[in-house]
Length: 254
Image (cartoon, rainbow, N blue to C red; front, top):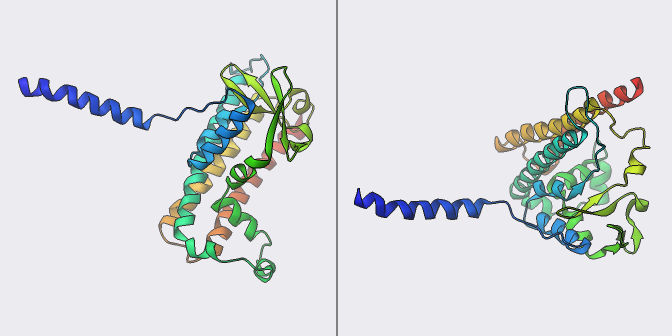
């Protein structure tokens, strides 16, 4: 028993150290500028799955027929978004490793014109470096604290998306948000339990498509980056189109 007693504290210490090492990182979002730094840090650290935690969507104090609150429905959508972004990050890293030589080549105008579908370069950029703009744009992004718990988000001194995207102070720090009075008046903003569920399903569909593509990528089915980009573009396009049609039809019925 004596050797076990001596070893047990060492094992417990090792387990504690391992668990603390695997803990999710904490981000300082105590000011609008620190929030922008936190977004950039999540991207630079290769943790796109953390990005949804920087989003604040104000929920109405309502409960749907099945007992689910709108806050819970929004939380589910953010959870699915986190999973999807995490999967996109993994696919992106694998593509960069697998086709490093292709990515180092410069794409000429002739290459763009010869692309059969016309959006190959766009898809390629979206799946090989999907979060680069969040990192690259940090130098031009600023926040103007308005002193009322909100801040204007500016890009090169101009409001982002015409002021449609802003920053708001939450209980645990600052977050990116969209003004509720603006989105609620938009006909495509989800208003029902089923509409929020379809949005969650859309994100799950995108994640599943990326998972399917990752398996094919691991199996070595693509010889070039162009082939891989064409395949993932088709998979994502089909998934998004189907769910978008479902969502649009629900809105039309309303």
